[in-house]
Figure 1 (cartoon, protein in one colour):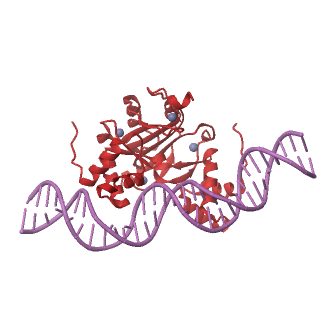
Figure 2 (cartoon, each protein chain N blue to C red):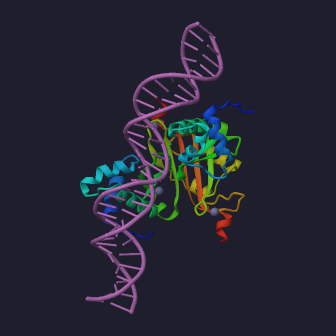
Figure 3 (cartoon, helix red, strand yellow):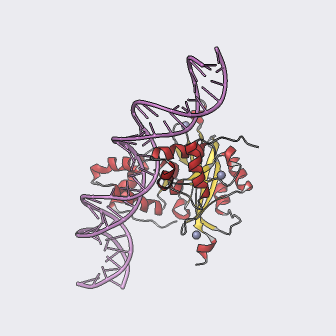
Length: 132
Length: 132
DNA sequence: ATTAAAATGTTATATTATTACATACTGTTA
DNA sequence: TAACAGTATGTAATAATATAACATTTTAAT
Ligand SMILES: [Zn+2]
Ligand SMILES: [Zn+2]
Ligand SMILES: [Zn+2]
Ligand SMILES: [Zn+2]
């Protein structure tokens, strides 16, 4: 088991909202939606997002500037993320593939650089969009 | 051999500047530096960047919102990119590793989604920064 | 109680990117 | 060459994303 971390008030509000969402959320869309909970300023959102990312509860989908709840329990340890992104419907899902993560975690290039983190984003058309 | 593409005036100006640079460049830093060449507005830069990305002459380093010239001739065809990023000195280099690209290009997940593009960013400390 | 670390509140501002609309250039075909 | 389509450009305004700076409060461990 990994360490349980108690979220602060703002962190919990923002995590709850992201977790309920079916798609990645933008920071300002989060802000707009949690204003009724007392969160007023962008910085309050960004600070919570930073912390949630740090502890692996959410990820940033870099190519979309959007945030998504983690679906793979191992991310709270590993900082190794992979996503599948549909360019048409913008559906994003986290790839949870042990072979892939093992391959990438062990990847070594010729520069002698050692990696402690990676982010991979695959793009294409999802099953639904492909058949339309 | 792949098709040679003639760059337009603005595209050439901006590509030349990015290619000479040793590190990834930000859009507004590019803008500032090419103003003496007659490029006045952000949109002129972003339009050129979009085109250069489309044809594979440059890439966007998503985690840094920065742009870097392609060092691997295969990118003008493939749209498959991988970078190594030092979190301390911010050095970024394109990884040109046939095994890696083959592995990722052929990667299939269980959703039946087929990918035509990916972007991978590895993070860590480069050789120099590690020994300091 | 003291203290340090983490979190919050608030305002202002910086940075990154796009919309909208008018115009001009380039190459192809009738 | 005239017409056309596609691409590229110019310009102003604005949208969207993210951080700086500073004051205060909460939390949790000594
Ligand atoms: Zn995850
Ligand atoms: Zn789709
Ligand atoms: Zn490349
Ligand atoms: Zn370094």
